[in-house]
Length: 228
Ligand code: CTP
Ligand code: MG
Image (cartoon, rainbow, N blue to C red; front, side, top):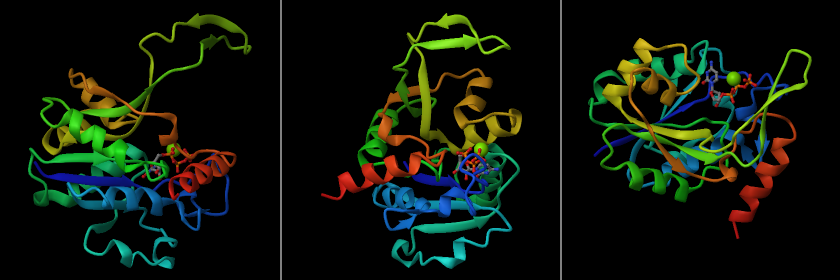
């Protein structure tokens, strides 16, 4: 089994509302994206980590990435959506990827990904016919709203999960799924639309996606708590 990681990092971070894309905001002494790259590069099974930035990105070159020597590849291949960014990367990798190679797609914005998260994913899915994703069972009670912002219905949280990343599928299946179902928000969504059932691999809330300004302090706390 060969494993590749693809890290889409071509978003603009509109909900963060910062002066630069959130993946380049300072976090625990590094650019935010550094942390997920470091975790993925630290997993021996992962042969190559492919970062996908936008063609206009002016931030990547402002930092020193030499500590990831040899493991990291940068593609200026960002698309209009996350799915498009991932699809572009797969296209550019072309023959470097065999159909049976595993691809782990991980959001640059999930900065607190830990090695144990990746290891559990690899272990659980090693012989899986479909692939799957890290996810967390929903803890809160869920409400569906009407147009006026009043509760229309309480939705049972039983068997509800929040999808995280990495999402791990074989390259051949992932390419086919994203070609056939481009309008998805995650890779699993495309695979599901092809009639397959990705495996949910339980993770925890520390692997959250840094989205809003108030998420930065929490991410920093989690990262600092690990370095002891
Ligand atoms: N992403 C990408 N290409 C896009 C959009 C998003 O590579 N066209 C990446 C982001 O850089 C991020 C990941 O996909 O690492 C998850 O997306 P999200 O958290 O939504 O980031 P943004 O789209 O940048 O943020 P926002 O939606 O608030 O604008
Ligand atoms: Mg987005």
